[in-house]
Image (cartoon, rainbow, N blue to C red; front, side, top):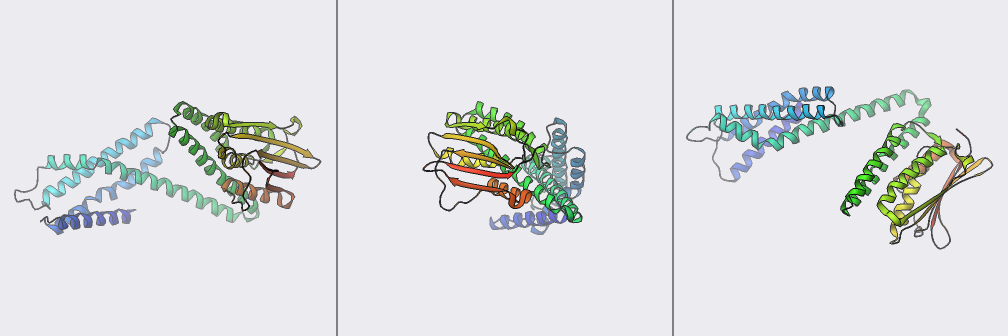
Length: 347
């Protein structure tokens, strides 16, 4: 971290000297370079304190106290940085003013106000870097654990695939909210955000599960479709044909949503008048069939699967091997059918 600050300090000092010389100014260049570089010592010394604060008051959070503590810390560091910089400039007069350096108070005020935005950016950079490194550390620990437990490799692979779905889902849902805001549908966007929060609790709280009852999957899917209907209104119509006797069937967690999302994005959304979505579950002996149909445009000859569908296909292969199938096919002259078959079992 200290080396990063030093590199930034040298860059800032070099840039300051070069720009001022290019503008034809006449200063004490060596002193100016040294003073500019030395002024960054505050950030080098204070960074461990910021990291310690982050351990005590973690971000991001919904609580007010941690944000207040970090805001106060940011302002305090800004004041300290301004003080140190003003002291250096007042003592060395790097600008070579014939009348001597400006008064310390004037120097401090100018530096504090002038660096306010920079203070926030630099403090935020420390926070972001800390969170990133912490996330990488956790990831490294998970990977090490997976290596030590090689006999559970299949389970680990499934967990990795499952985790890929969550950010993809969140990204697309937030995209839908953005679309509503751009269409100036503020009240609908707010309602969608509230519903999305409820949905995300379901997505993230159960991220380690691989299987759920079909009933739970359908409940989740209804909530997801309710959110999508806020965006598409009457353009999106859907129905579900799920027999009660199949509600206890065991299915991979979060397996239908990518197919429904794909149907909406590439089918219903492509039509000005929207369309209808149908979700069906059926059992034929030891085989469970799940299908998602939309009456939108036909598939092109060369299909390029997105993240959600590709992940669904890989998860099914990892969980069931060759005892499962997943197909996307055109139906007659209109509509696309996505179908999954897998061994039937109950929770």
